[in-house]
Length: 370
Ligand code: HEM
Image (cartoon, rainbow, N blue to C red; front, side, top):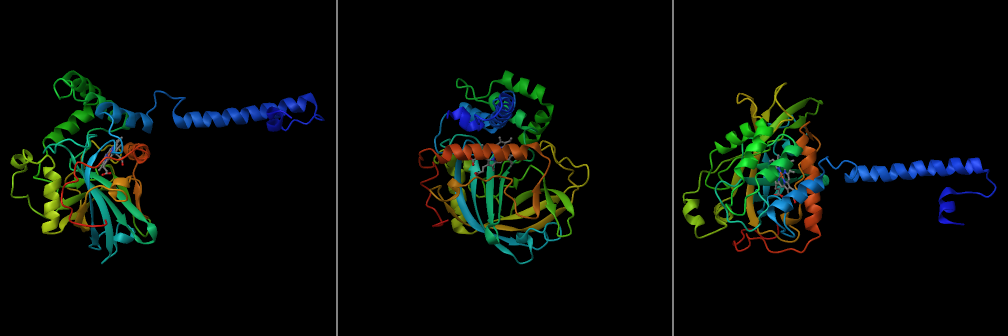
């Protein structure tokens, strides 16, 4: 019997009419399945943004850097703990917010951009990614940036902005005409860019504030949902030495300073959660929330060790913002699912590539075996 017969289950005893209907039904099934795969792969919708296109564009703009994250490529791993103040327990049933709870934390500080060997620069956006290891394998993973708002509202705008901001090899700066056209098409990004430009640039990672930028929701034990954004607010003051002067001698000055700070004493950030009110924008990360919103100080992240990226530590982790414990859920912000999809695509590509050492490898690490 031929393969087609096998598939159709054609029986020589069947009438031509029933064989026809059976074949037609199988045809519909095969076409439907193929269509579903094509849809999922984006082949039927070339105008739609899919994670692969965003990650392709990172590669187009930054060049190939096998083994590294396609964004926030230069980083350093860290470890410590989270000590809960108990004040978060009223608004979220997440177990780590219980009074007196201490939760192990691992994470990564990094510089935004897809260049793993770029010299540290004061104005490059800095990030703090954390992974809270709750009991029974539950986790909270979060990536936070040191800017007041995010520069774009949608994944489509993110894709367009990547190209518009691509440095021109001749000048090392983006083409001003391309940027002008991008901001004309995205006025919300022009406003956000002004807020980002006006931010205070701190001396390093340890005295910087890192924000979720996207909104999430806390779920209380009684089911009450509260829109939230959060910030990791530093307890330590600015470092005494000027990084601008030291940067001339050390291209990893920001990372090396952080490593030295942790070796002197653990670095502390308070986790401050802003409680949103009805009407506060949860689906637009370019917009700040009103300053008079209530803030809750729900605990402290204490970083006690750092370690250069290596097999098995933060290098091989995807800080997907939608890995959340019971008690925290995502919001209607369209960036969240786009981030989740793009991080997974970046992770899948880099996981299968050969690895080169991180630029931040010569720092004398303060912790072993993160
Ligand atoms: C559509 C919007 C966005 C896209 C497409 C995007 C894309 C990416 C990609 C591809 C990575 C590398 C992931 C990996 O290989 O593990 C990354 C890392 C990161 N992103 Fe985004 N991102 C977006 C928005 C945001 C926003 C709103 C934040 C807010 C704070 C953010 C914070 C971070 C951080 C902190 C990291 C580094 C995490 C780490 O150290 O592993 N991103 N992003």
